[in-house]
Image 1 (cartoon, one colour):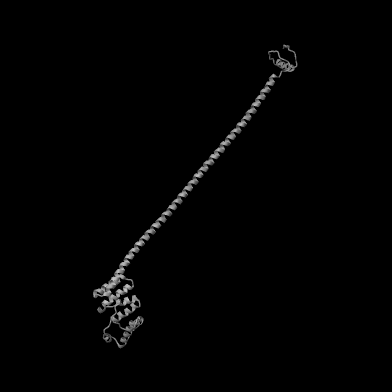
Image 2: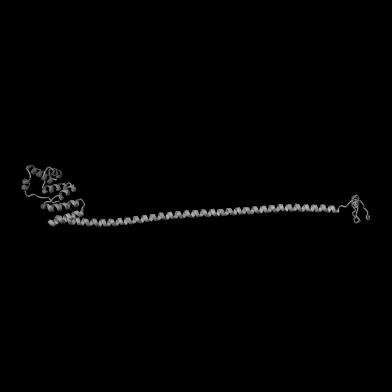
Length: 278
């Protein structure tokens, strides 16, 4: 509840203000009581000089319009000892409306130092309770935030681990694939080399077989030539010399003075078995 000043009389105002000011203040008071706070403020603004009491009522008008920033400014400007309690009480109200619970608690405590008031004490206890609830809520929210952060961190760590595992698995698969390719390549090279060696070995055998065949052919031809030569030579030895050739040969020897051993020869064309001596 906002604390409103109730004037017992208007004599101090009359003494310190002109008749016009009195009319303005009366109109402002009437507007405030009727709930027309904007008009009350408009009336207060017409005054050239304002006492702390007028400023206080003007601040109350701003408070009722929920212009707490302007109300706070006006309350805070008050310096009259007579308005000290009302000032701190209404400062407490204004801070509370602005959500500044700590400042509101301090303002109510200042007001209670000046005067013990049931409304002020109720408001103070209410703000303390509200502050405690906020602190507990904040603590709970912080805990939830911490848990959420922990969950998020754990999730991020898990995702990072999964990504790392996937990357490692991918690298491993890539290495295995490359290793397999290398192995296949080596195996292929080895098989290729083995095939080439087999082909060379087969070609070598073919060449050797062909060479052997050719050699056998040559040997056969050579043997055939030898056999033919032997046959021809045998025929030459077995062919008898005719008497004419023999006499011619003997005559040639005689001319050379070569003595020969005369043996009995079988002459060609003679069919008797008698020996003809030389």
